Image 1 (spheres, rainbow, N blue to C red):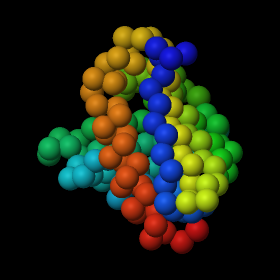
Image 2 (image 1 turned 135 degrees about the vertical axis):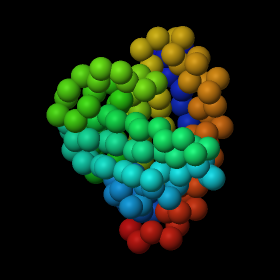
Image 3 (image 1 turned 120 degrees about the horizontal axis):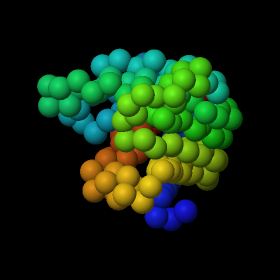
Length: 154
């Protein structure tokens, strides 16, 4: 549903396996997951349905914890997570933005076809996420992911 979804599509010049590892291994997620100079100081990733997806971001000296759960994991092809549920399907009492991310990875002659979809429960939440800089932020992060993944062994 177009008014509920925000979408980013890129061709990343890095192997799909390396891009996947960057999304599913904590030490490989931390260097690129937020726009620089901000940083992720902690990441807990349990890439299985019901597994935890947690990051602690440091932005302008303030910590922002983001807790959620993986909903679907298809190795090297599709990754779905949300802040609406915590690990082991526990409903989040106070979700962050309240959205579900659907990431798709496919081979491409130049590397990886990468699509990120942020699905929201209301048009208002999607609009607010867009105004917060979804396209700019996720675009910057995709470029950081591409650069970092180029140095990661597939």
